[in-house]
Length: 256
Length: 151
Image (tube, rainbow over the protein chains, first blue to last red):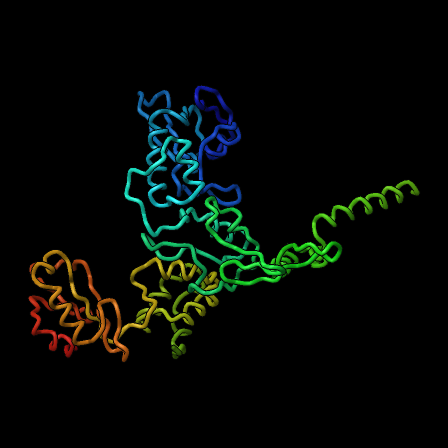
């Protein structure tokens, strides 16, 4: 265990933990767009930048991305000092210039008092902030269906060869975790379309509700050792059935 | 476009077949075919056991890799500051007209690729044109024909 001071309060943390993890646990509101528990810290959005210092630093301080900074004994952290706020404002100002139409970015910027960018607005921009949560999560899920393509100004998230991604199973992990909801998908009757790939949805054999895609169910059943029949019934019906099963078990126990 | 991909297996056999070899393999494919054919990327992913998305990510990251067929003769016109002042754009115009393509593209017969480059560090020789890695300095508009014929 290590002891550190966060905004004047002494906090204990586990060795090797990242600073942002501790801040989140202490319910300190530090913005971050590229952070997700399911993937390694990335340091792309820079918004979780905090000011750190130590007693023997003779008044000097440093600015670090808390998501990538392991906690240390005696660390003194300020999450909302005037300079940190100023830094974050500049970052949000730049975000706003590149993604002026993103409601999430606008809200976050407004929270820090940035309502209009002081830079030149990118006219034909999109809402992708290149945080790579989507591609990293896709890797974690084990599909590796999408990746970042190109670099510099032309960098984007795309399926391989800019074609319909062969490895995508339509799990929606990328789209649902996108901080700016940039990745589009549509539900149309029994079909889900994402990355220009059309998937047939499974239908609950009890209530007729649509559940996950057939490809996703097949993947889970194959790689996570879950019988395929499990996915033929929706979550709600599974729970309804659970009561009956538990009743059965109780009656067996009573008999025994 | 269909390719004779027989040479791929020879390239794969030069390196251990794992993800560490990815860039080396892509470089050799680029050298062999002058670009990275789609089929070659797919074969690379399969052979090295690297997801296709990762192969594509790496292949698009480096400028050394091309994704479109390139000509036998690659003509690069320096358009850096010095070359620009000394008339590189006139040379470019002349070459574009003669080949009937714009810089950044390849002739239909796959004989020539015309490219611009920002500076090659030979400003004293400006304007500079590079044909298949051979440098030509003090190029004049009237040299265009000679450049196209050069080996």
